[in-house]
Length: 419
Image (tube, rainbow, N blue to C red; front, side):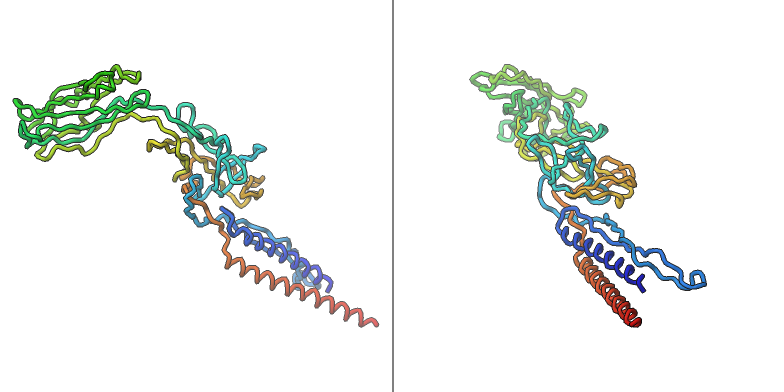
């Protein structure tokens, strides 16, 4: 009879633990990246009563429940935060605390400190790769703290080549307005100043299917009073309107811009008339002369506007001139048995003695999940399931409490028999 006391008390203790787990799950209903825990009950050893071995077996109750964290995928919710990131699939973000211990988290609500170091909301350093002195993010190197640029001004890159896609009107008549066509082209010098070149095409009056060109720059750009000619020549087309001279083997037309008034370095540029595949960029068809696209490889100086995490875990810096540069890369750790991790608070986990060696690498490789930028992973707590469990554990506690009161009454009845 008295064994029933300890059996019922063990059940009360186990149910208390289970209710604690449910309460903790519900408390973290809105915790970013939280993984809900479940409870696993286990019985204690039984005793055999009577002469026959195993004929009558009575257990000693229930042992301390085991808690198991369920690393299922949480809903990925878009937040628009530039430094928010969520993992779609398996894996963890790798962090390092102030003591240098490696930790893991699924919470991607990151921020930066005053030095531009990427951190978690609770102050751990996010691990990955940062661009080196050559401006390259080398993911073959060991991981470390990620430092994002702050208040950076990019240096200008002088133009060395330009091109444009255009058509010159094959039906143009010499002396008419359609026999002349001009195209502006902005280029950048070594100081970051812009200069507008003007490429003027004029239908040749003596040679069929030939257009003469002239490239000029405003005189003010070179300290002169009038436009200065930088290059001139002729373009020839065949009977199908294809450019034949100069040929692709000529390597483009050299254009030199020297003696700039702003004291920038002399510019030696190439006007590319053919694309990478060898197709001519300029044609002569019976359509109005026009330009469809233009490009040049110079970059004006620009200030940093935003730094954000993109899909795939790349950290992109955006500049005022519309350019972007990869300045970092998040690392993802794949752990074969994540249930062995130890929760240390602040959405972080640490490896235990049973934890397999983490495989750290790029997102979406080696079985690791992908990173979704501008998003966060929601908690996996199912409120309906937790309320159901809460009712079950409450009923279990009540019935085992009833066992205690019943056995107590029986013990009192037994004592009364002696009187």
